Image (cartoon, rainbow, N blue to C red; front, side):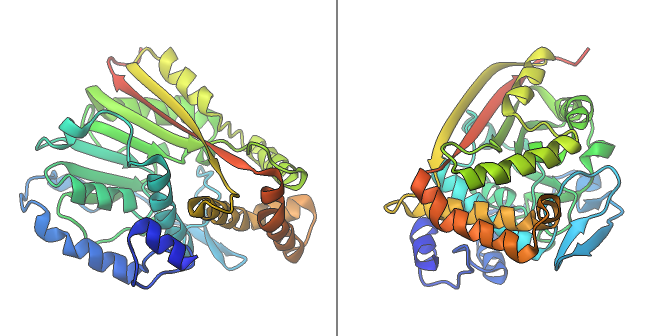
Length: 342
C-alpha cells in the first residue's frame, strides 16, 4: 500500500503510514519548508480571529477510541490522532481522484490579497495547509470542533478556530469570500442543517462570494448483499438521529432560500475495487477504516460481537466489493451568494 501511495502523492522514499501518508512529524516538516514562500504580512488575519477556541471540549473513550461528548453534537466518528491521520490521507486521496482541491472558478479570487477563505469542519487542517501554501496572499481559516490542527508549524496565512458551528460562527457577517465544506452532511440533524448551519454559512459569506459543498452518498453503487445490509443498519442509525444526508436535500434548501445563484453541480462514480487502479484500492481502504470506526455504534445495533463485525468487514472489502464491482458516488456543488435570507 505504501509504494502505491508514494506514486500517487509524490512521497517516494519518505516514511509512510498504512494509508501511504507521510507521518505527522514529516508532514509538519514539509509544511514548514513552504513557509519561506508565504507572505510575512502580519495583517492577513484580524487579531481577534487568531488561534481562537470557543469550545469547552468534552470527550469519552470507547473501545480504544476517543469520541465527542457534547450534548448537541451528532458527529459520530472518533476525534483522535488515528482519525486525524485518516482524514489527512483522505484529503490527498480525493484531491487525486477529482484532480483538484475545489471546483468553483475562484483562481483569480485566491490570487488577490485580502481574499478570505473558510473551511467548515477542517479536521486536521490538511486542505487549509495545502491551499494556504498554494495561494500565499489569500488568508485561510479552518474551523472544527476538535483541536488537532497544527499550532505553530503552519503557513502565516493559515489560521484555525476551534468552535461548534451549532453555536454560531465567531465571525462578522459577510466576512468570507469563499466557503468550503466537505463530508459534513452526516454530522448534523436535518433541523440543525436547515435551520442553523446553512443560514449561518450564508450569513458569513459576502455577497458575490462563493459557497462549495462536497460529499458522498451513503448508498454504494453495485453493492453486494452484505454491504447493503451494513448500509441499511447505518441508515437506521442516522434516521434515529434525524440525520438526512441526501445531497439533493442540501441543494434544494439552498435554492429555496433564493440566497444563491450561478449554481453548478457535478457527480462522479469512483470504483472501490479494480485490479488495475491503485487509487480505487485506497478508496476501499478509506471506506473500510470508516466502517471500523463505526463499530461501537453498529456492532451492538446488529447484535454481533466486535470480532464478528470486523470479520464481516474483512470479507466485504477483500472479496464482495470485487465480485460486485462496487462504486462510491461523490457530489460537488457550488453557488454564488446573492442576497440575505428573509
